[in-house]
Image 1 (cartoon, rainbow, N blue to C red):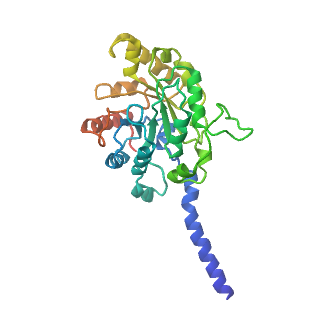
Image 2 (image 1 turned 180 degrees about the vertical axis):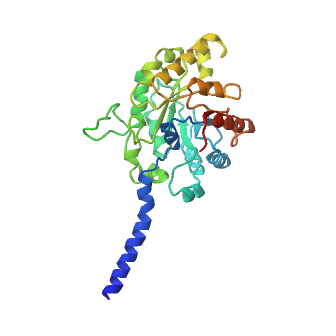
Image 3 (image 1 turned 90 degrees about the vertical axis):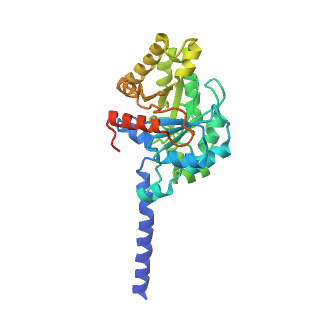
Length: 314
């Protein structure tokens, strides 16, 4: 009887240990692969998309891109549609193969609100369904950047050394925790690199003359993960064509500041400028234009060129 009980106990402990192993391993795994890549000092490559179909979600999840900018600034803003798209990007075969829930392609959502608008409720809903980052368009001041970061953060524990900017995000982690596949979502759902363990990216867009003027203050605001330059809106705001020397000088000045402060910088690129932008210090370029269904042949070629030029072999 005693032998039987011990045998049963051994079986239970063994099974429990096997079941717990992936969870323990999960604690040490970066869920945000884009952050993991940037921490290695490597560039990351992305694409804007406004096609929220299941077919597109599946294609982008296996596209070899590092991140996707899900554009809800210039498309309809629908939380139910976004939730379906995020679920569509979930690749169970990849999860089973790698033994953890890290997504190969990181989903980041661009808001419809500009920096001067109140976007707290938008950010809260986007993050509560599981997005791994938020892009804030048309940010023009450090205060707007601070408010953007605060909207992504939970209030920190008393005595925290990274309590600022004070988080204002309300607590409702059930869906996002399920989507990420972790039990400690509220501890990991913070902005990187302010929180070294954070899994959220705050992409701040600079796309106006005033934004360029305040670029250094914006990018050094605690909690800003990366800057993304919007060339089209910037040239329009400046009242000049995109190829005008003043516009290019403004873009170059923001890139130089990002390099100086070691802040990842993104910008739209194509076949004609992807390698030169990488050489300039851009670490988060998009490698093609609006993706309607997966990635086009030209975007795939640009991605291949960018990865080879940067030495990416993963």
